[in-house]
Length: 218
Image (cartoon, rainbow, N blue to C red):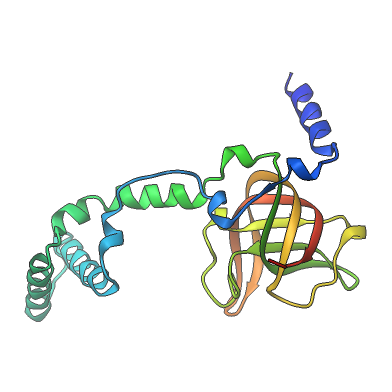
C-alpha cells in the first residue's frame, strides 16, 4: 500500500501544471498558523537584557554558586527597575521553556498544505552547486545576507531549490533577486554551508523542484 501511495504521488508531481494551478506565495505563507501569547515580545531589548541578567544570577544562586555582594545589589536594582516598569519577572521566567518550545515549533514546522503544491515565490539566491556557469542548486532566502552575513533564518524561512542540470540558470552572483516556480516538498534536512567564520549546518524545512527561475520583477 505504501509503495502504491509513493507511485501515485510521483505521478501527480510529474503532471504538467497550468498557470491557474500555481499558488503565489510570500514568506509569511511558509510559517504555520501557530498562535500563542508571547509576553516576551512586548519587552524592549534593554528589558530583555536586564531580565536575562536577573535570570542568570538567580540560576547561579539556586545552584549554590558564590555571587559577590556587588552583583547581588546590581541584581536587586534591576529587579526593582523591572517591577517598576510593570514587568512580572517571576511570571515571565516561569514561562521561558514553554515560549521557547512554541517559538521553535513555529520556526521549524512546515505548512502541511504546501507539500506537493505548485507554487511561485520571490526571494534571494544563495548558490550551492553549479554546472559550468549555471546554478543548479541554491538556497532561496528572504533577505540579502541571510546565512552568510547574518544569522540564518528559521528553517521554514529557507527553501532548498534544485534544478535539472540542463535547466540551470546563469546567476549574477550571491543574493540575486528572483522568482522561482515549481513543486514544493516538505522535507526537514540540513545543508552544510561555508560561513564567514567557518562551515556550519543550516536546517531547512522546504525543498523546491524548480521548473523556472527568472529575474525578479514586481
